[in-house]
Length: 164
Image (cartoon, rainbow, N blue to C red; front, side):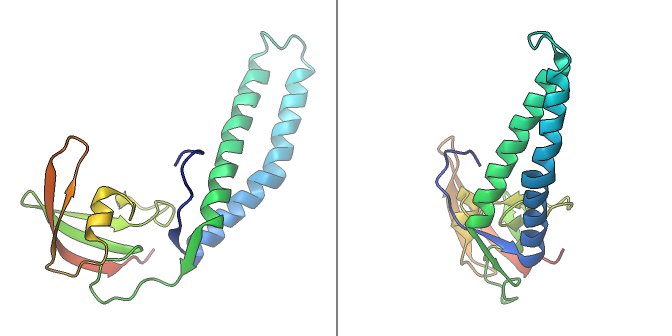
């Protein structure tokens, strides 16, 4: 998500919320202190134009600040809760199996932050596919448009709550 995107709510498990909050706290506290020390140490080495350590530390600082902004926005707009009901209705936080082009595809509907450390593919509920199947039940078919203008048909085969 870019910094200019309109903030939208994302579903997060309590575990994912706590993990991201801890990361934000570390980056905005101890992380900022550490990077400031690296920049100061590199600055003391002399000429900043040819100081690779200084430029590397400034780049690291920029990446860290971008992650802090991303986490802040995500946590401020997160819907935190228990796993969704195991009722076969597609909602964020569920592992969904769909049939598309005669093949089955399984993925998590929601935020990639929920599935941290998992090799499960993740689709946002705001993506064309996610929006098309949200609220559908097992056996329901849906269509959505892809950027090249084609219409894709999918059928929901399974929907179960994600368990980390």
